[in-house]
Structure formats: structure tokens, C-alpha cells
Figure 1 (tube, rainbow, N blue to C red):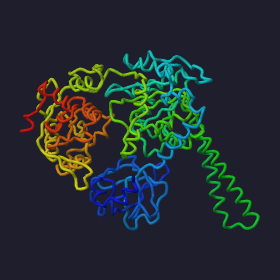
Figure 2: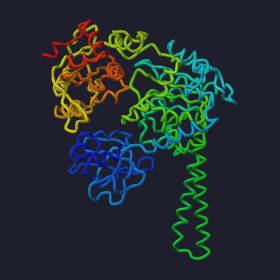
Figure 3: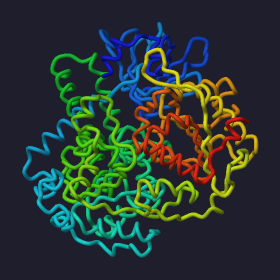
Figure 4: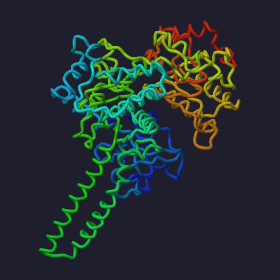
Length: 617
């Protein structure tokens, strides 16, 4: 996919999509956990074009063309208006000479590890236990009964009481935890705002309390793994984070394997052997004959000793951990290759493709807990052929289709009750209760809500969508202009800061247009009027929340075509991110061509939540 993009996309298309930056100056700037940091900037320090390079992304560094020349792979450390900092394994020569090109990369390692996991899963009789494997394949006659049986984990001794009484869990969360402790396979469904991760970390803590380990806590994204890690550390669980520190949230980097190795008592011994070896190597040039041969042997012996000390430190840190945290792909790291994890908990399980989910499962799993919500967005799959082949369906969703029951969390703590009302009825069989009251979520000032007791508004916009030059995305200038006006009103009232507001839209073209508009209106960098305002796609916002969400639907055409906006899971995510207020902008005629959107518009209209006064204001 990436190579195809390099060879077939024009420079203008790559720039417009935010997938490449050209003609950058570079310089080195210290180290990050021992690895060189490179800074890439425009000439004269001018602002970079709008781009999609973010913290933790893989970036490919080249002179002019990523194909036909040696490419350097790096990880984005951070970004600013005028520069991007990238961590690399090795600093390139002549870094300051000439200019450089950056391309968004793809993770080839992920593909290889998923392929290996698929092979392991289908070839190994004993891997993960045949019963659990048959369950995951959906080949057992009575799935529910088999999933409910206790896991077959030998040699486990209960260390102490489970400790559920002291845990801050509501009834549905407690029921899910109690059930998961006893079952070999559990699906926990967490609708928006119901505390999926809170439940997951308390379950992990309970598993630690009863000595059910070693335990692997995993998720598809680094952000989700960091959330698990943060919760575990707050509960006092000894957790270690596997993965490059550059991809880990700054406040949590001390829990990474690299950071814990840096603090290890054996570091002093390693430093002594390394210095001794450096001295020996410096002396080699002045030695001859037998003396030189002996010195070479000493150097090799010291290298072996250093590797042994490093291996001992890694083993010591991992052996001392109660829970190992890693992304689903990160579990395939060579550091964990010889380790087996009888207990695996996977958060964000509905966003992981099946091959990705199998990477942790094939590490000896005999008790599996999948936490997710198949009513929200599925795994991201670009290829149409792969989508049709089933790659877009998660293991979690497939197991529900095989008849396996889910334990649904039913109390939501995020949304004003009115915001919760429609998604609960439409997507969750009206089972969601509120853990917050209207008084806890007062409507934001600065916007004329159609009904101040019900902070939801639909703003009808009659504009037209625009297809970009490459035909790859869509935008809507009328909606974008109204979004800017609405955000200005919300901020002028002084009730909210820019970081309290999330602007979301299904189309990358609209994201770019909105970013441009807010840039022209004052900017979003530190110190600017809109500093902290987030403008993202719906797909990039799952799991997130803001006080106010402003959603631009974009589609407006005479044919009533709404494309992937038709996916009801995308609507579910879009309308469940807000805590105190939800504002949706869209073309009524176009959206009514779709049944799910028509139902939401009917719901809003019945409650007099159409904001015609904003449309014409």
C-alpha cells in the first residue's frame, strides 16, 4: 500500500493528504533512551504544511524518493508548527547536507507477526489449549457452556482474597469481573462511557490477587495500552510496559522495560565491563602477535558478558512484573518470544483484526477476556478485497455471531441523559442507565440550545459537498464556516476553553478544510486563540470524550448518497463523545435517505432540537 502510494501518487496529492513532507532541513538534537533524535524543519523555520504525522507514527526518511534508495525508519517523538522530532536507531551521515523527505510509513513487522500467529494458531495442537482454540474457531457444539467452564491453568495457587469488596465497581461492572474470573472465555461489552478500561484494570488486579499469572494486558493501540498501564499503576499493580518509550505517554515512560533496565542494580556492573572493554579496544592498535590475539579474546569475552548482564536485567524486570502490558503486535517482540501467558486480557478488542488478536492469544493463552464494543467502529481495513475477505470483522464480533453471550456494562458516566437517550434505544436495546444527572452536565453557555434542558442540537445546512481534486475525500465549506462560528460563540462565553471542544467529521478533506479555517482565524498552536482545540476524523475519536462535540456530517448532494456515513457504528461513535452538549451540522434532505440517520433526525425533530435559528443566524 505504501509503495503503491509512493509510485502512483503525485507530490501534490501526497501533500494534500498530509502523508508526505518535502524539502526539509535536518539536524540532530541529543538522544532519547539512547537513540538519536532528528529535527526536521522547513527552510527559514517557516510553518510546516498541514500533515498527518503524529506522536508514535512510523516515518520513512529519504532524500528524494523512498524507492530506489536507502530509507531510514523512525518514530515521531513530537511535532510543532515549524518542526517534527523523530527518533531513529542510527543517525544518517551528512544530516545537515541537502534536504530530506518524510513519508508516513506502514508497519511491516505487524504483518509478519500476524502471519506467524495465524500459522502457530492453526498448526500447534497444544498452543493455548485445544478447547480454547476450538472455541475461538467457533467449532464447538455448545459454545456458551464451554466458554463458561473454568480455565485449565496448572500450578496456580491463590495468593489471597480476590478483593472485590474494596473495588469501586457498579453492579454491572462487578458482575462482569466476577464472571470473568471463573470462565475460560469472556466477552465484556462496554458501550460509550460505561468504564470498559476501569473494569478491565480492576479485573486484572483481581487476577493478580488470586495468583493467576503471568498476565498479559494488551490492546490494539498504544493509547489504549497506556490507559491500562495507568490504571494498573494507580491500583498498585507491578506492571511493565513493552515497546519503544517514544510510543508511550510521557508520564508513563518510567514503567517501560527500557526505563526499568536503566534503573537496574546491574547497570553498575554493565558500565564497569563496558568501560573495561572500551579500554581494551583502544589498546588493540598498539599490540602485535600473541598479545593482540589474547586482547581480541578478552574483548569477545567482555561482549558476551555484557550480553549476559543485559539478558539478566531483562529477565529480572519481566519476572518481577505481575502484569506485562503491550500492544497486540508488540506482544510478538523477541523479548517475549520464550514466555507464555496463560491469562490474556485484550482491551479495544473490537478494533483489532483477528490476525492481530491472535498474536497475544498464541502466547500460551488458556484464559481469555475480550473487552470491547461491536456496536462501535470495527478494525480499520483499507483494502476492499481484505474487507470482503473478513479482515474487517473482529474476533469479538465473530464470537457474538457464533452465539457467545456478552457481559454488557450498563451504567454510563459520560453523557448528559438526553445525549444518551438515542444511542441507548437504537444501539443498546434501551439498557443504558445514567451514572450522572443533568445537573452534573449543565449545557454550555455561548450557544442557543433549542431546549436548554436537553443540550442536543441539529443545525440544518443547505450547502453542497465538494469532492477534492484527487477524488479521494470530500468537504463542505458551508458547514465548516458554521462550525467556526459556533466554536467562536462557545469560546466567547468564557464557559469553555478550546481543549473542552472536539470538532469531528467523517472525511479527511473536511478535517483539512477545518484546520485551514481555524489556522486563518488565529491558529491552534500554543498561545494562539484556538490552542488545544481538537479537529479529527470520527475514526480517530473512538474512546475519546469532550465537554462539547461539534460534528460536521459533510454529505450534501441531490442523489442522497452518504457513503461510509451510512455505517451506523460511525454515527454511534460520533454522537456519544460529548459530555455536556452535542451539536450536529448536516444536510437534512441528504441524510434522510439513510434509515439510521433518518431515525436520529426524527428523534431530534420530535424533541424540537432542530436549531433553525442557528442556520439563519
